Length: 261
Ligand SMILES: [Zn+2]
Ligand SMILES: [Zn+2]
Image (cartoon, rainbow, N blue to C red; front, side, top):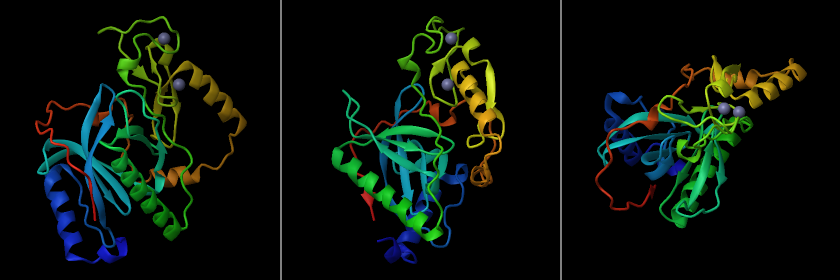
């Protein structure tokens, strides 16, 4: 499929379209050999609540953004190299159905499709792209993945001390290592998590102890492959999940099926 599209006009046109929808808020996406494999809306579990996001699957990257105007304008573009992606199917749970985890070295999150068929399609296409990519490059799949953040709404008290009630003043924090919601005192420590940032990040006291022990044990482990995967990444302390905030909720509720080319 992908080979058929590589130098096709249709593919070039589609990629130009994606670029123009992101406008100046996005990065150039037209690269020799790159193919747009599919696109569609998925519900992404964000820190505050689930939100619709537009996803574009290319043969080497997964791009998503906030929807300003359906099919016309997107912003807050995120680009994930597929080489470091690992998918994990999620069991249906109440309202949350047809979901899976997208795990990467720097960020992991859950997404949900409208139907189980769409879930299968998405997962199959993404996995196929990852497979082809790793086979071509001869690289190994990245094995260290960032924790999936527990949504704010799932914790009214600190998940570490089980005492602190969260209020406007007692803010929730996320441990960057295990993803739990913890209070300030229970996440007062910082630790270097090289797959996520070059700066030290907030971790809970449990993780701080565990990471410190691990580090002492394997001080000399070669982390070069992680550093390599960091080269192109912009350096942020990751203190907020920037795609989380949007003041616009798309008005169209017509379910649109994803398209795969
Ligand atoms: Zn606490
Ligand atoms: Zn932790």
